[in-house]
Length: 424
Image (tube, rainbow, N blue to C red):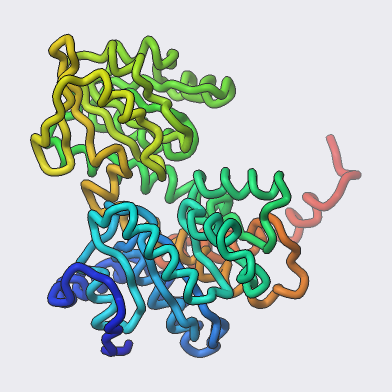
């Protein structure tokens, strides 16, 4: 890879590049599928000359995705999708060691975040990788003249897909967008095992509290909620799940969790984790009845799941007590502890998902861009899923990297499965 420095970029400190390079290379060791794709991309150059803007968490895993896109010939710009998720040493290495234009600083303020979105759009992207759909929404709302230049986009998160579906419903999605989050090799593993482990990792790093014996309330039982509840239970916590979907609620009950409304769970929880993608799922009325010492955090994409403005209004004092932990003292004397300002606790307080699970997610991203380019003449505006064959290919490569073999169907089995005349 290139050692070219990109002087116009905005990162915290170029001197962090060596530490970042070591960490990127360490993550690469656990990303064999993406490495295989990168090796093929280097030979075939499927993205040659394509301008790509990436709005994602700037982590070691994302760095390896960016390296893969560059190997495929893409002209990349990378910005952070969250003000607190950037790993500054990784950003430095991307610029100084790999020559990838990066605009990301951990703790950047909201005006800077929006400035970086504009920089990514100034790149005149033909392809977009988005994480939460801020880049796509800003493009459609503010850069209508650029829409015609876009071959297509991809979206990584449940939150982003919700926004894209709303855009599609309103006739506001003017180009093809691949729902990477709907790929089985993404959400079944990244959302469940990645979020489950990294969320608990973030909470433990931020608080240094033992979770065994405590009551953990998981708000939402989608794939992220399933993984979070499973891992909390594994650490010895008593887990309560809150839901609005009756099917997911039944599933949580069958998985052995207590299920109840948030108004009841708020009185019982020691630790609260939101993973819904919705707004104010923990609201002022819930904060008012929480135990003294309750810990509250969010692992959904945006910081709107906790009504922190409402909490601020009922608090008489707010104090920073640990890094990424604020103590709100209510008027009744009870204290509530909020982690990472309500932003993604797994990325703000820890390092995000482990590389081995992001290996499949980012394999989806790389192959999605290749798919968009190859099929640009046929794909219509709207939300699309990657072909099942791509999912199967990624899963097969992952199994191979793990040294796991599986069975194959015999000719007799194939014939039986395609027949309707054979019965009892």
